[in-house]
Structures are given as structure tokens and as C-alpha cells.
Image (cartoon, rainbow, N blue to C red; front, top):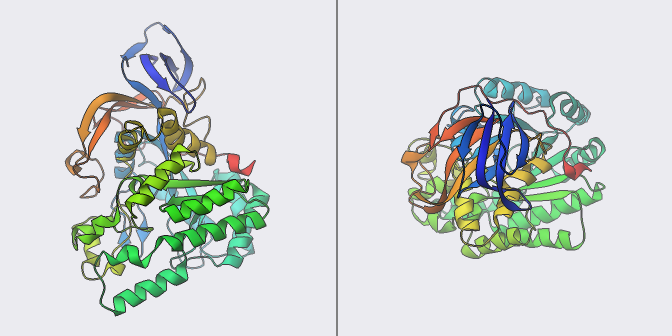
Length: 462
């Protein structure tokens, strides 16, 4: 059905202006003043912001992590995303069986997501070992599936060592593929975790001490150098959490290194390691990298203000506090790492960023919508409001206030890390491809409405 969004303050990554948006056949047909069409449904957005649907390129739906599985599948998780103003995700695949091909997890994730997701979705591949076959499959999967990014880890059971990281980067440079990297120094982390446990220091407060900021900074520095040595291989650093890590990024920016991007996440911009002081409640916030300190929060906001950081994701990976998280009740190192966040992101970043003057509204659009799309081959189909783009949008009322509480959330998980947080600005309506899928915090879409996104090359590969 034809629709007109009228009199809204339209926000893009470069400007905010009053106007109308005409929507036909799931796409934006025109943007202008006094637009109309015969029989069109008119939605009045006067006094409100009209934003592109947010794009979250860092989620973990239905993730199998060791003995535990994330409690949001691709239905529950994407309903939560939609209710938080996110209309597209690119999900990170879990590790597969030892020695499996890259295709194994591609097929598994289609089984998990197809006919469940309520918003549009894509996948990042995952590389857990390296051989000539794996290097060949990267290009095959990019061409056949539109999976033009793969993730590697510098820690955990299937981490890659520097030699294999370098081989992957060289292949990625040749094929125009982005390599997303979890940057932490595995050796130091394992030593510290083992030492704390042996000494009986097993409360949640030892989790951040076992993964200090310099572990992140060292690994970020190493990845940036490896990428440069591989000829400028396209690199995307996920979930930057610390001032120390940001300083390494700033060095690379100052040296004019190209073909890399950096993501931080909502939790690293708002929450501190004080949460770990509570022996029970602290389990909710066990994630890797861990929460840091106030000075890290302020440094990351400055990085966003100065356009040093490129995107804000969520790393949404929920485990129930009453069940899975209790595995860490007597030993923080046994707690599954991860927390929910896909529904909270837009409201929290608007309130803590735009409403508090830390970033502009256009910067918010850039970090939550446009840049994620550019980095991962979805632009201009997603992440922007332009004629020809998919009609994915959010109407946000800047005058509304809301208190975040688990009772109003849509994830299957049993808590939110933002319980009781008062936010300025709230979501009135969410539209995907011209269809209203959320209104007044009620989900109106249907299981399986999401379309699989075959992605093209990232701007990082140019």
C-alpha cells in the first residue's frame, strides 16, 4: 500500500530537514515537500524525527557457546530488534564442529534463521581453522551467498594464530572480503584467569581483572599491523571497549592507515565495571571484553564525537540470569559470556548521546544505520533514506521519556542490563519495507517476514 510520512524531521547521516516521504512497493519513491498520492495512507510525523531503520551488524542469535545456547532464536531476537528500531541485522555465526568446512555453518544458519526472522538478515561467516580449502571457500561463499565478511578470533578455543591470521588477511585482500576480529591477547587472559581461579578469586569482580584493557589494546595494535602488512586487507574491529584500545586506533588513523573500521557497543558507552561488585547481579554483565571504567566511557564518546569510531553495535548474546548465568555463581570463568542489548540500543544511544549533546543526530544515524550498511555491503538498500532505498524507517518522538525495564522488552531473556534507566526519546513506529511492524512498543509483524540479504562488497574493500 502507498504511504506518505508527512511533516517529519527527516534525519540522514549528513543533515536533518523537515519533509515528507512517499513509499510505494516497499521502497522510498520520493522525498520532498507536500508529497501526495491517490489513496495513500498518511502518517503524521510532525514534531518527530524520521530515521532510517537501524542496522545491527553484531548479533548472536541462537548461538551455541560451549555447553550453553543463547536464549533468543531468530524469531525472538529479531522481534526484540524490531521493537528497538532495528530493521536489519548481520549475525555472527557460532563455531561449527572441529575441522568443518565454511559451508557447514552457512547451511546451519539458514536452517536456524530462514522462516523465523521477522526483519531482514544476513550472516558473517566464521573461520576457525585455516587450510587451502577454507581459503578457497571464502570467495565461493562471498559470490554464491553474498556473505562478504568473515569473523576470526584472537582468543577462545578456535582462535587463530598470527600466521593463519595473516594468511586469511592476504586472501581477504585478494577477494575483497572484510575480516571482522575479536581482539584480545589470549595468552595473558588465560594466565590471569587460571591464576585467579587457583587463588580462589572467583567472584564476578575478577572477570574484568582477568581481561585488562591492555589485552585488548595489544591485540588491536597487532591486528592493525597485520592488516597493513597484508597490503591493506579490509579489517573491522568489533566491540572496542577501552581508552587504551582507542589510542591504538588513533595511532593508525594518524598514520593514514586505510581499509579498516572500528565498532563499539552500547554497553561500553553506558555501563561500568562497578556492576561486577555484586556477587550475584554481576553475573548479568559478564561479557568479553568486560565492562570498563567511566574514563573509558568518556574516551569512547569522544571517539564517536570526533568520528574516530565508525559504528555502534550490540554484541547481543543473551543467556538467562536464572539459569545459564548461574553456572558462574561460584566461578566467574564458568559463566557464559554475553548479554542482551539489541532492543535497547537506539533508545539508549539517542538519550545518552544525542539528548546529552555528546553526538549529533546525524552522527547517530551514521553509527547505527548508514555506516554499518556501508561497512558490510548493504548500502544504499539499507541504512539510509533515499529514493530507491528500502522503506525501512523509525519515527522517534524526542519529547517522550521512558524507563527501560525488562517487563517492556521482547527478548526471551529474563533481564536487561539497563533496568530502571530513564531515557529521553522513544520510538512511536517502526516500518520495514513499507510495512508497519511496530507501533507503540507492540510488535505487529509476522514470523518469517524477514528476507535474507545477499550483500555486496564493503567500502573497506574499495
